[in-house]
Length: 256
Picture 1 (cartoon, rainbow, N blue to C red):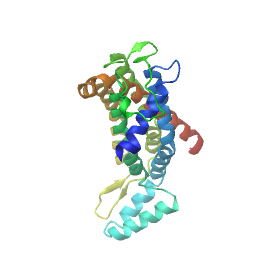
Picture 2 (cartoon, rainbow, N blue to C red; picture 1 turned 60 degrees about the vertical axis):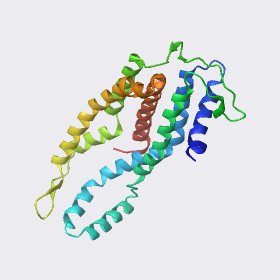
Picture 3 (cartoon, helix red, strand yellow; picture 1 turned 135 degrees about the vertical axis):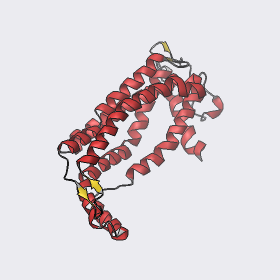
Picture 4 (cartoon, rainbow, N blue to C red; picture 1 turned 45 degrees about the vertical axis):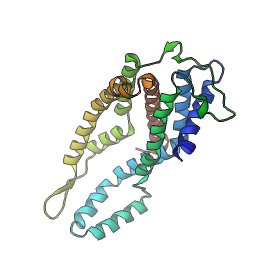
């Protein structure tokens, strides 16, 4: 089922793009990445809007947690009523993860098996193996590339720096709600937790770019040496798409 409905369609789609006149492997991967992300855009949009709504109802959630701290059943009931009132779907992010994970694994396999030659046994009858070169605008992309890995890390940094989540966190810090405590004096929300979350976000902003660089220059090449640069291209384009998606949603669907 995985091969029939995920891997083979993705593999043949990329091979088809590679067969377009004047298209090299690098450009085909860029176009392929954009198409895949556009298909997943409705789910990504839903997950991002859910994150924003969750942040907006957080003060009310903390009040419910404090008020029903000793009654878990009633607490869960009130939380679900709050989600329903504000039209929040708290599990949409999990659904997106379950959908994207097999696609991501399939993409890694596609990129690995597309280089250096196309496997004709994996092609549909109406798809023909192209003669596209393993380059990106004339640059050889066989094996790992320090430049592409560095670019992946830099793009990851800017995406995290300007992401919707970071923007929302800055607003939450600026307009932090009063501290909410349960009957035992335990803090359930307020400035303390907001500051902690802000600190974690700042750390991730520098850690994730390093992981992006390390993954595409050391970790992935150790397992998929020939596809390392292609995966770096996919990662960079996908991250840029995420940034554009967040900026679009912030402008069109969120009123500050």
